[in-house]
Image (tube, rainbow, N blue to C red; front, side):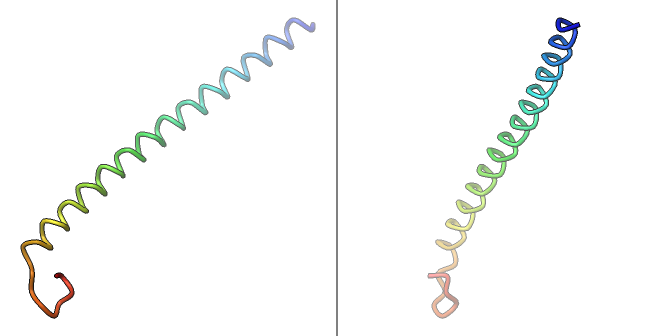
Length: 60
């Protein structure tokens, strides 16, 4: 009986760790995607700031 309970316990641990790994992988991918999107946005803003040097509007 102790062997069976150990097997079910290890199966539970495997399922839990797999779920955790999948969630963390998705989270890291989203984070990297978000960071690259933010970098593109900030790059775009910098380019637009250089183009629009109008005094009095706070762009310069």
